[in-house]
Length: 160
Length: 286
Image (cartoon, rainbow over all chains, first blue to last red; front, side, top):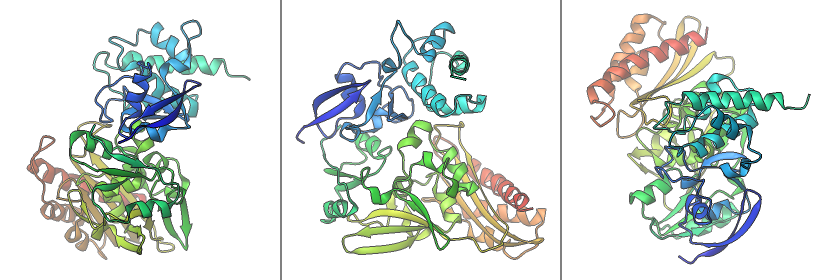
């Protein structure tokens, strides 16, 4: 079917892009150069394609790009920069939470969505929040620890 | 992915206009967590999708004369946070549904319309006597969920209809009632049920005034275990009565062998979990 000019706001910048109705948000983002959004199972099982849409974490492989128009999209690169990393970025690096790294963008965005809702999560809430993100390398222990450390770090920087 | 057109109506009237030709190849699109996967795999081949995501009339949860009206577009994530949806069986089923990311997209109407034999929300809705509100250009009809489901991915919904809401009738006043749900999967998240069991139990002193039992993933569609219910209804509570009910439930289902489990295992687990859920719901009404 005919492409339509769609306006996508990604990490604060707005792009006009011509997309066919059958383009998923995942491929729209990657074709725009946002390759920090990973393509894994494309069935909603693995979570590698996670993005924040208006603060809510979803599988970008399951959403048609047209339906993401005029919403705030955030990828893992939108949370910070190498000079000014987000506490989640820093904790994942410090604890060696990434091996191959493919699942990490989705992991961090799931954790971000959790910490926005529950700044002091329980262990159960951390595990639950990461339950849609599959990692085939690490065994999850360091990923889990990194989220806990980031939560503490964010908690200590909250205004009194 | 195969080619299709995508319509984005802003109102229910516009959505129903788009579906009015009653063409099975024009499909309503809710959260898309089944539909997009099905299109990619070739299981679904629509020529047009009518997205319901911007239709405000399908959102929201309200109570009218005690009846709970759940908007079709209510996401599974909302079932975990909305105070009016405090039926334990619904909460537990939503908590075990896929994973948090999928729950942010997937809708209750989508799960019902997909009519999977293992659909997580269906057994709880069966024991709660849920009714499905179907609307089209030619009118509105209410269909009990038990009649709505015909078989694997088959329902009574016509191609020109959309699910507008799910209605759950009020509880009888002053009845101590408890509901529960258990999903047996190969893991805690991201799993398709091996079996699932939902129970709604109403108590009157030492007697089981009323009980409903629904079973998932052990028949072509989620079913009520009416024989297992009948032996308990109006009877005094006893361990032996629960065991007998669970034994009958295992006979009433018709499971298959597949990659997740054998039919035999499924039958055995129905017997175990029906008894446990009966015990649990009874204890919660104490």
